[in-house]
Image (cartoon, rainbow, N blue to C red):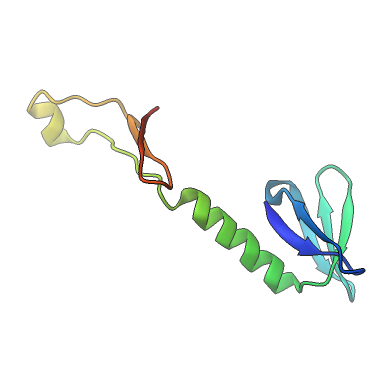
Length: 94
């Protein structure tokens, strides 16, 4: 989710996974896969940077343990994707 500023100054949050296109015509127009369109004060570059930063925050804490040959040889077999660490550092079992 990213926050954008509409042309009249209203702030809204949109789901960045639904962004289909971002155009500069000359205002920045964001088209979603749902068919909705929003005009924003932010530049195309700023929208892209915000989406990248949002994705970075989501994926920052994810780690994946995949068994390697030495683990299997020692009898320590792990399921792929067994341990997933979320952004808070807490381990969850997938």
